[in-house]
Length: 526
Image (cartoon, rainbow, N blue to C red; front, side, top):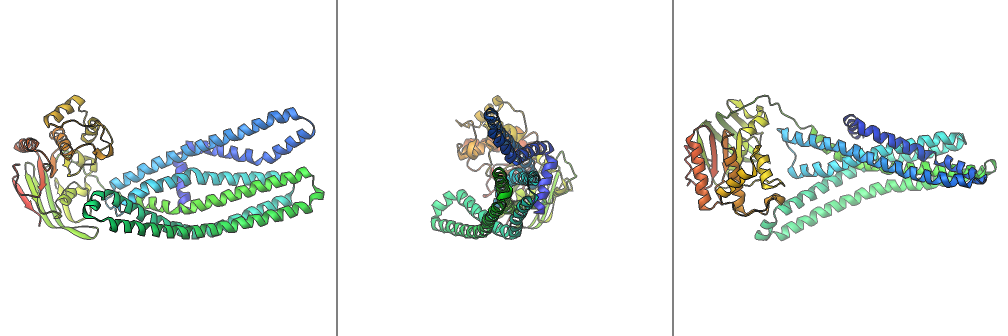
């Protein structure tokens, strides 16, 4: 629980204005809820004195006041929780983008940044403030009830504490079972992501049985874990429920014994207060169980935030030299590259050759600093690449990958965003016409599914044309594959024109040795 409250206190520090507003409405709700028995007592006395007109006025006011306060309270909770998880989400994403040691699987990252963040929103923005409100209702109710009878108030307090003790005792068991279920959900989510991304491969290679059996396996694991979690949760919930029934019976007996010493109206007020406190106790118990079940979400977010940020103090405004000396690079424990040594200076153009799976694209990801952990060193301008500020590095690199990820924007806005330029729609249209781009949907929804493979390649060439004068390192990952002959010739001529100026370093990869690009160096990966 310490970790959860640390985040709750952090949310108050980060969004004090929203918290104070929600706290105000929370206390207002607690006070008006607590004094309802005494308001009813006053109304009963008015009825007894035949002051019906007063009752007709007060009851609707009380009714609408309660509704208004509750609505304002929930709105304030949404704003408080929403403001905090917005900051928390940005912080997590920044840390992932900055870290040099992302040792969390990508499917797990997706689950953490979506599902876990939403659970934290519910816990920080709803459950914990409601716990505060429930405790406030109990305290105010007990204070007001002391006026009527100290002994009965003491019994109500003891009943409330018994419920809380059972809840706290059950915390560890609920946390453990919830953590196990969370892991099973992640595994199932990872499998669904894998299935979704492999649909075409499954159809072509007839892997239906393999994936369907995997689906059954992960669902069974999740259901089994969920059953165990529910057994734990509802076992303790049942104990609490039955304890409350016993306490209500005892309370009724106490009132029955003391009925001669109290008016019927006082007994009604006692009963309302007791039921109010026990209802808030039930709310507290359920909220605490939900908070406990969310503990693993806070652990996962903490894992992200504790990733090493990395120290990057160096800045470059031009790529003059690249020195690569990689002894080994492994991915998921599998060696991908060994003994790679390349030295380049401005004006060099090198073709990287190798078979499928030899590590050509991996080498490009090392040069662009996408992968940062390896045995060896990569230097740019005689500086360790891992010490160069990411922004200054990316500003000097144009990396045209085999498969681009397209933003859900119009083609025009997409090109302006990824090239960081203010190029006009007219200028973009001229480039598209030059490349015989053809007709297209304006919006690049669903990762550009409306574009053909050739159009996607041509869109990469548009980036090349826009940025060729702005960058000093151009990296080409089989950009010319899938192009028609006319566009391939245009691409080759464009690259060769850039090469003539000898003011950039160009690195290109392809499977075959044939190329019309005027590379002056060749490196074979075996």
